[in-house]
Image (cartoon, rainbow, N blue to C red; front, top):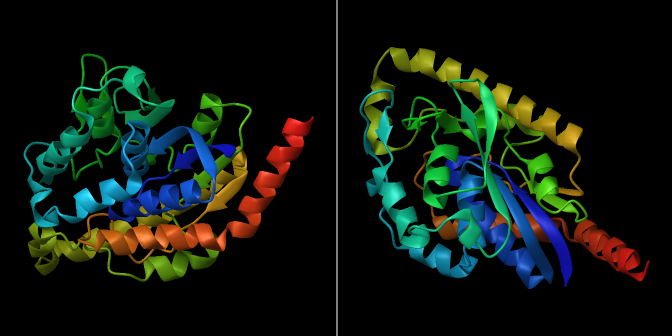
Amino acid sequence: MTDITLALGGGGSKGYAHLGVIKSLLELGFNIRAIAGTSAGGMAGVVYAAGFDPEMVLEALAAVDQEKLYGFGIGASILNPSGIHGLLERFLGDLTFADLKIPCAVTAVDLNEMTEITLQEGNVLEAVKATTAIPGLFPPVETDQYQLVDGMVLNPVPVALARSLAPRLPVVAVSLSPGPDRWKEALDRDTMPANPLLRPISRLRIAKAFDVFMHSADLTLYMLAELRLQQEGPALLIRPDVFHIGSLDRVDIQDVAQLGEQAVRDSLPDLKKIKRRSRRWFRG
């Protein structure tokens, strides 16, 4: 077995690919010793760290009606994520980070202090709610001290955080954002969410302004992800081919997971290098 740490990036509905990546890495003999995640990556990472088999999680998710994951929002949000929170509660219950099988942390952003926050203590479910609170779409998670939103705002793929959880192990990062050579291809897609609750927006004139804003925001996010990945330098970067999927799209969960599995297969030569380096390190 080769020990690694995972850094799982955000991406909404694209995030099911993370479960495929984890499943394939385990089958190849990698031992995941710690996980850091942002947004959808935080959700997948926490569920695995709680001890759930990825295949079992995928089967449970595939049985869920995705149309019921979100409702109409109130206050500072368009959508109410109570459905997805209820689903997560089935897996996480009242678990704390101390109850998890391996070290795990997720990121969020505090709008009070305008800074990145690491969540790795206390209630796991509340931390996942915070790391997945897409600004504007979902309500912020309010505490006495913080007003927390999605960690992707500042940290799309938390490589440095993953490294801090297990400093001597190689970090395998999984980004759901495209590399620069595919930015135009990814941004050519329709940015209007396919979620049925948001479809009426597409018939309004404001939808054109929304489309311009979303394309610009996505490009900024891609650039941020690229800069942080270059700066923090994972041992290996895996990019599942999920760039055609919108953050709130209804998807075939197994198909998206298989895109994660395929990305691992495409990365086999580099994964073998990590195994060889690991063996040399242990031989001293």
